[in-house]
Image (cartoon, rainbow, N blue to C red; front, side, top):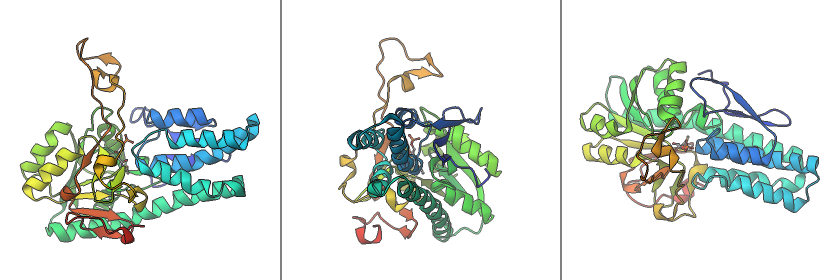
Length: 343
Ligand SMILES: CSC[C@@H](O)[C@@H](O)C(=O)COP(=O)(O)O
């Protein structure tokens, strides 16, 4: 993928989002000018991935201000619209953190808000680049093999999921750039296929060798010894290291722990939520039943079945071998995260 690709971009008076619901078959950009359309885009995963929805939320403050100017909203109405953006999805803490950060410039006017949102975006790309280097260094040392590595990843954590480059996929891209990557096992990521549609698309753009596999294949692939490390992203990391990420992640972590394969979480410090004590306190988004009862809009489960569709699961901190942030790698399985190193 060309590095310039931006999942979230500000055009001057609107937000341009690459529509991730139609990839990889079509590359289309949605122009968003209204708060309702942004909330809908976040909920339907037109824009998705914790850092990318953080960036969209940051620009969403400017969007609400502009819509407020056009439609004569009061200050309270603009702030209520911002609150709706902030609550569009509950699990990824980046959305709340980025909206709150940009809101601190609200009283300084639109230009100040836009400058802060642009800074959120710039810092995210820089954090991803740093994580790529730290994660690759750590993995090569930890695995200690003098051959290229075979890594497994779950969901999509690349340029599409961030302001640019990627978190876990950024580490993978860095390994590839260093000539130290043999192959990626990309879990397809049921039910919305972020792995087979989005990660595989990014890997094809980058010329990175990969297999797409069913989520159910992941533990077996790890137990067979075909994987040197698993690398995933995160939507929220609690103070004790418990990590919410796309549903299916915890099975990967359990298999890695069983065979002693490193399980690495790559996430910027904006994903770390020290005010949430443990994973049990993380609000896990429950999505519509149809996403699991249907396939491409056609009902597959029998009439009478109910669907259970949590979008995320929580991997206990004890199963996380290392947490890569823009500051370096923390080995977290020993217990509580050292908060002073993360904020
Ligand atoms: C760098 S993205 C990290 C996480 O946000 C990612 O792994 C994930 O779970 C995304 O879920 P999604 O529902 O597609 O927004």
